[in-house]
Length: 463
Image (cartoon, rainbow, N blue to C red; front, top):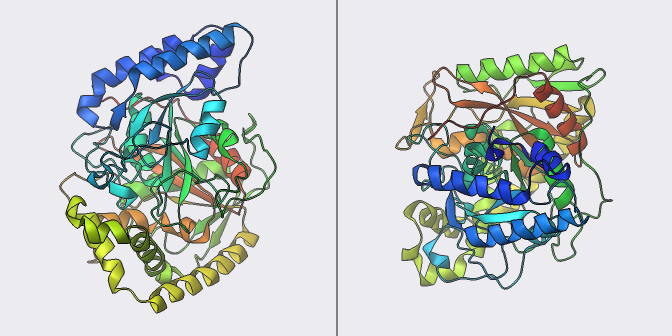
């Protein structure tokens, strides 16, 4: 096994035991980038020389007894919405050409303090306003969409060109590309991870979180990221927590909610079969399945768009009026649509969100975790714009991908996607786990328990 193939936890163990040096690991990943990046387009920019210098510093520190913890010397990618002092934050947009960050974002500073090594910035759907990331290609089939908006981060992790990466999630933008590329993606509870220094799409829906090879890896990164920052008005004041799940697989006494409604409606049969089989494995591990009805489903998409579009429009108001030609057509049209929405529309969406949060809280009094598909279908072809369902419904690809992920953004609940197999043509399938506010320890425990019962996952085979 080459160093770039190691999970974060395995690489950390090897570095701590002096079986692997950070320089060897970073060089291996940079060699992998050189080989596969031309096929995939995951990165906006690769900072190879800076990464090698940082790896050398990490190796020197570790050799002299200054080991910082499990992220020390681990190579990472950051979505190009996340500020790094002295580097461009372009949001994969011509609107941001020439922009350069003057300071680190909170999450950048925390990962740097933990010893992580930055490889570069990964592509996003322009300003995170989309679910496909068109400039990036799926790690398992370059003819298919990567998912978005954190497509670059997910493809980098899936292809071995980053050991872990950060993404952002406003309507599913961590979980969708993670599911479509066969890796783990965690959207934390709203406010658990500070967003200071991260370009916003929709301030009341935005989250920052990790994309990793394994659930344990996600827990290690979350442990470094979580914690209060007064510069983010939504940041929660919570005690420091070690999110690493235990080694056990016993889920006895845990109640898993199995949706009767919504999450299995208009879902690819291959997706449904794989996810139901994975849920059955949770039952084998001792969990009790409880059928539940998802509340207020008819309002989900209207509420998501009713919140996101006006907030995005407000953020982009100045540049949309001065340089509209610099936006990609799909993003510009959505931003222009914000000017057609009234204050009443936005207020009604906020009221619906308040009611939805209350209904979900009641639902999660009945169960500990809800298990469902992460997305309704595997990655579609890059040129496909719609999907047709057996009931005659024709749905836009982005609308389909956001449909199952947006409830966790509206409510602010934590959600984790875990790979549960591949379809008949080899495309990944993901299971989504949703929990109570600050319920990350339970989600990670369930995801890790499932993962331990499965064969070790391999990286995408794109050469």
